[in-house]
Length: 292
Ligand code: SAH
Image (cartoon, rainbow, N blue to C red; front, side, top):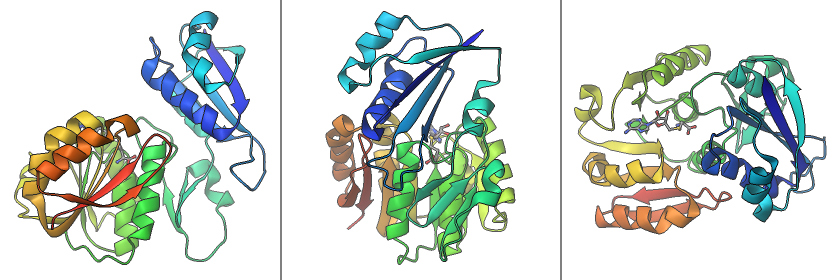
């Protein structure tokens, strides 16, 4: 039996709850989905809906203690038959907009906004991270859109997951992108997404732990590197990033939480980078570093 817990409320409180559920609850929910629950145009006023699916129903007292600080109150519970969590939770996720990027699943292909200048990216529900519903992915896309005027020639997406950032960069700049992930399943899905988005001639996806893969190691320097990973690996990767970022090379970092920012920034400064841009995106800042 699967148990679904449902909360509705303001976006910020639910976002905080989503992070707590995913990172501080044991056992964690099998899947979490976060959607706008009404049509109010302004995100700040809209009611949002957070759903978490559990194999074993969580202790109400434990949930309350965990989520008390968010002020969202007790959820409604629903019992469901056994389901494929991931597909189920994601099939309900709506279109995500970040800057000019519009991320959608196949089920929403007929609902894309008709505005000019939008850059659609199709990412279907599956096991690779990066549907755009996580604030780090949306944050990277928002900052990327602001950097549209740059013209990097050699681009690397490290920790590509669904390949969402690689696809966005290829569509934005029409330049080749190397994409890498340590996880073989993600690489398989990334390749499918690259094909689905019609950018297979621009994006090469490889399995690589950091810069280890020969195709990455052999590129003397990159002009632009994305790394939406986590604070720990980002810090470990700082010297390698410095070795692989060219003169005025840019490195976009995400996946760190606000309270880890000083450590990450310290590691990148020590490696010779300086911060040139920063997006304050909930508790997930996105940092842009450059080599002087
Ligand atoms: N770029 C996507 C996915 C981010 S999730 C987005 O922005 O949404 C982070 C990804 O990094 C995961 O797919 C994980 O498998 C990968 N990863 C973690 N450590 C890595 C490492 N050392 N080298 C390469 N990839 C790594």
